[in-house]
Image (cartoon, rainbow over all chains, first blue to last red; front, side, top):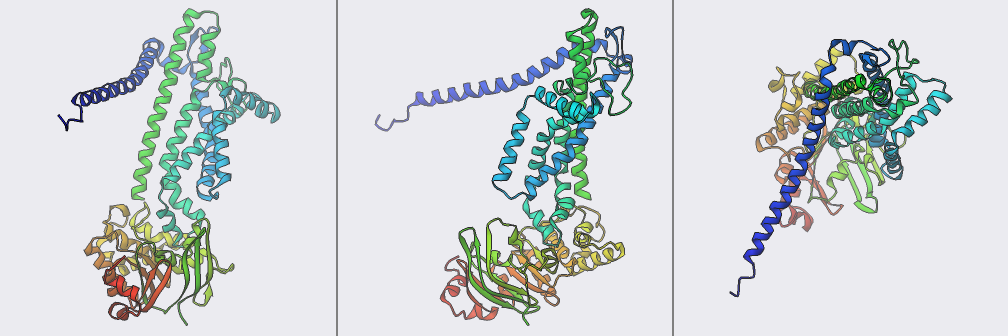
Length: 295
Length: 250
C-alpha cells in the first residue's frame, strides 16, 4: 500500500525496546535497595547476638577479647558534637556569605570550586593535616579537640553547600518584603531567611554528623585511642570511637575467635546510631517547619 | 512642594536602557497609576522610589529623584530609613512565615520598637486600617499562610502601614487576586489616600480609572503621557495612549 510508510513491525520493536529499557532501569534501582538490606541483614545477623545491656555499658576487658564498647560509643558522640560545634557556625556563616552577601561572580565561583575540592580530599589526608596542625603545631596533642576540629574541617564543605542550597530555595519576594519595611540585610537574614532555611540546614548538618560518626582515618592520628579503661575527662583527653574500635579489633588482637562477634556488634551499634541520627534529622525538620507555620 | 519629584531619570540594567528621560511630579496624598504593556518600565520606575532596584547587580541610575525635597539617591540617605518612609506592596502577597500578629509587628521590631503595649496597639490599628481586623482578631497567633490570598494581601498592606510611611508603592497589588478581593483592595486604596501618597502599577485599566487621580502611560521605557486620570481615559493627547486604552495593542 502506498500510504503504509509507518511500518507496523517498527511499532512493535520500539515498544519492545522501551519495555526492556525500563525493565533494566527498574531492576538496577531495586537492586540498590536489595544491597542495602543485604548489608543490614548480614550485620544484624552477625551482631545481634552479642548486644545486651552489659555490652553497651561496660568497657572492653580481657585484652579486648571481652567486655563492651561503652567508651567507644561515648567517644563517638563527643566527636560528633565537637565537630558540629565547629562545622555549624563556620559552614552556616560561609553559606550565608556566599548566597546572601557575596557579589555573584568570579569570587563566589572560586570559593565554591575550592569548597568542592576540599570535600574531595581523601579523609586520610585530613587526618595527616589535622595531626600536623592541631596535634603538633597548636599543641592540642591526641585529643577530642584535635579530632573534632579535623572531622569538622572534613564536613564543613557539606554544611556550606546545604546552607547555600537551603537559602537559594527561598524566593526573593521574602527578602524584598523585609527590606521594604526598612529592615537591614542582616535583620532580614536573621529574622526571615535563616528561620525559613533552618529545617534544611539542620537536616544537612545532622547528615554531616552521620558521616562524621563513621569516619576512621581523620581520627587515626589525631584522637582515637586503642583502649581506654575510663571515659575522657576533658576535651584534651583522647577517646575511643566506634569505627576505629571496629578497625582495631578486626585487624589486630590475640584471639580473633572471640573478637569477631564484638566487631559485628560494634558495626551494628554504629549503623544504628547513624540510623537514629537520620531519623532525628527528619524529626527536627518537621518540628522546624511546623514552628515556622505558627510562629 | 511635590511629594515625589523625578527629574530626567534614565535607568539601565547593564547595557539595556529600561527607562528613558522620565520626569514626573507627584502631589502629596494623590493616587497615581502607572499603566502600560509588560516590560514598559512602569514597575522599574516604581521600584526606584524605595531603591528596591539597588539589589539588582549592574543596575545604574542617572537623574534625580526627590521625596519631600531630598534626593533619595544622595550618599547621606540611609536606605533603611527611606524604605521605612516609602512602603511597598508587592504583586504576589508575600507574608512572612510567622503569625498574623508578628507579620504586622515585624516592621516595628526591626526598626527598634520594644514597647509591647505600643506594638499591640499599632497592630490592631493598622489591621483595622487595612479592613482586616474583624476577620483575624480571633486568630492573631495563627500562621499568616492560613489566610486567603486576598486577606494575605491586605495583611501585607497592614504590614507596610505599621511603620508609618508617608508613601505607599503598590506593584500590581491585585493582579493575583479574585474579583471580590480586588474590590476590597481598591476600596482600601480609597480609604488610604486620605493619609498616604499612593503610586500604583496596574495592568488593569478599569482599576487605574477607578482608583487614581492621575495616570501615567509608559511605553518602551518612556513616559508617553501623564495627566489627570479622567483626561487620559476620555481624551488622551497622544495617539499611543489612545491605542493602548482602547485595547488596540498591549
